[in-house]
Amino acid sequence: MKKVINLAPSRRHFLRLTSMAAASALAPTVLWAEQREAADSATSQAVSARIATFEEVWRTARDRFYDPHLHGLDWSAVRERYLLDATRASSEEALASVINSMLSELHASHTRYYPPYEPEYYQLSDIFAGVLRRRGLERAFPSGLISYPGIGVLSRLDMQGRSMITGVIEGTPAQQAGLLAGDVIVFAEGAPFQPVQSFRGQVGKEVLLGLRRAGAFMQISVTPVDIEPNKMFLDGLKASARIIPANGRRIGYVHVWCYAGSVHQRTLEHLLSHSPLNDADALIWDLRDGWGGAIPEYLDLFNTRAPENVKWRKPVAMLVNGGTRSGKEILAYGFKKYRLGEVIGSRTEGAVLAATAFLIGGGLLLLAVEDVQVDGERLEGVGVAPTIEVQADPASIGLGDPQLNRAIAVLSGA
Image (cartoon, rainbow, N blue to C red; front, side, top):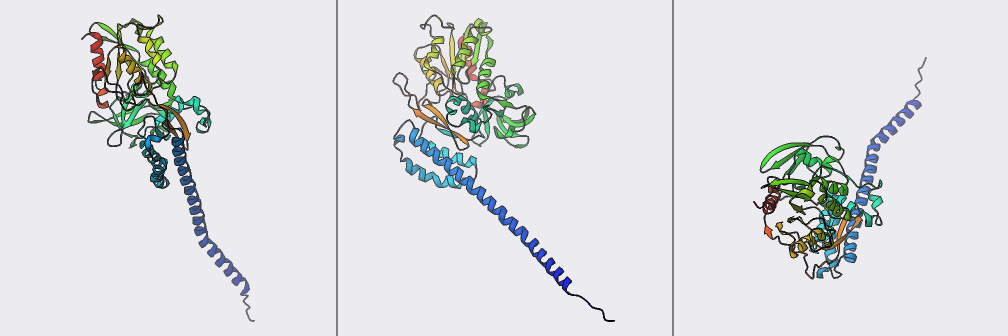
């Protein structure tokens, strides 16, 4: 009997297997191409968004800068010089660097772009919340609450690009942990330190900071909190009030970190009329660092020739430094001119142009929109010189604070 072999099913099976193999071989290629296309599309959208941010910052400066002639700059030519760099920017950080290089050509204070990885973005958003509500604040902060994870310090980059603390606000986790002005924060939990990002997802948890203090390396644990900027500055003002015994006298001390809003002045007046400051023999009014916003009328608090509702008629000294800016400089000018007391420290920043804020792209543009003169004098770029000069770099403030020590000596007669 002859055995019959049917080849047809095997051929169909073979063809089916071949087709499946071809499809399997093709699938990774198709998937890779789709992923590449999606990545290219995302990159293209990101580049377009960054260029749009750059262009809007440029237009806003052109249209709203306090000097319509933009200090004689060919602003269109400036745009052309920086546009290619903006197009090539590979991150929001790189874009902010390009934008700030462009804005620096205006040589004006209160003119800078702050991305959300900087605490100033949140601080200025809160300070200018009133005007920003008409400029898209709810898009940046949908919950209506302006906050960021942090520890309560002011800082700037040192020559090595590391974060140097310039101020530790009273009552904050940073003060409670023992951080000092002048500390350079090198890392957080083993990673390079970033003022906001290092604390993302870490609120309420201990974070180990590695820092340099007076040339020595040390580690400190700190527990970050959700910081509401205006509340932090106001609470810091309250927590700063104290009595410093010196040479048989009681020297009051208070630090006004921010003057944006009359609530800070009202709080100061309340502190001076209640214990312990109302029993002080003299007062140190610390206006170093932080933000401005003060108006000249605040000086009436210390002016013996002002109306009878003045709260303070005892000796007072003012502390200033290169971080004293904006409305605080106007107070320093008047305090010095009308001889209300000694102005002790170093020359103020010379940043007195009036500014407003705009939320552009993912960041905030602070822009000078009005010139300011005080009694016919222009303090922009000049600042106010102290009556008693005491130089102090940030590294020395936490370890003794020579400016504060000099004020104590002056007021105590030591």
